[in-house]
Length: 271
Image (cartoon, rainbow, N blue to C red; front, side):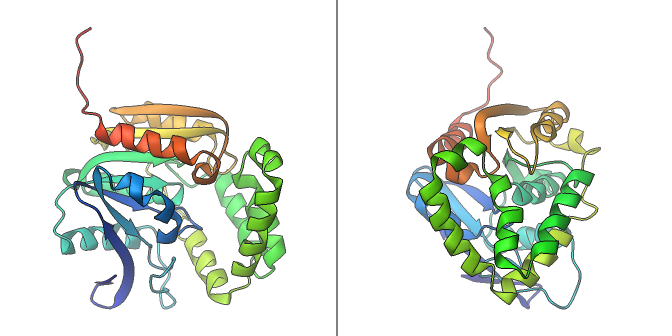
């Protein structure tokens, strides 16, 4: 389905199931299709709203303006109003987590719970240079794969799943040939320039789950420790032997963490 942001920009979204609404915000190279294998489990207790950011997946490409994360926060807000959803839990992974943080800060009354997987409070110098290395390889599919993909997995997963990795590599290289993908990826990478909510985290009021991975070379563990330190009502889960791409490395664990946090009522237990 499509929502017309500002009456003109087509934003792809899907609504599945019934119950308390959960919005899922993609990582940079993901789409609504990334979540299809998990819908049966996720919709057992929740209504799930999948979204392709503008310039991502099946949403419209933004070729006429330069943009920041603000366009994603604004378009998500307008979509939720269109769907008549007054309050939602928001799951965001990596890039999607950055948008989720900004949404929670701008619209605290619309944010029920916040789930932040492998994300950060700002675009650090490290991530800027990492993004530059990815952007510089765009246009050469194999070079882009080698620059961007091995670093999102843990070495252990990479070594133990060589056959799967090679098959996945062939599929991704085909995607990385697409000029539309190349141009969109450049714009999405650039949209993170200047992102920084590190001094505003204390204003987040929603119960927050923060998940970190030992071998996350994209958003390292110290980024999640910073989030946990400064978001008052937060829990931090650290996963050893894991990389940035938890969706592929530990799908069952990821879904268990999501559902456990969403289904638990948070009490001040007197023990």
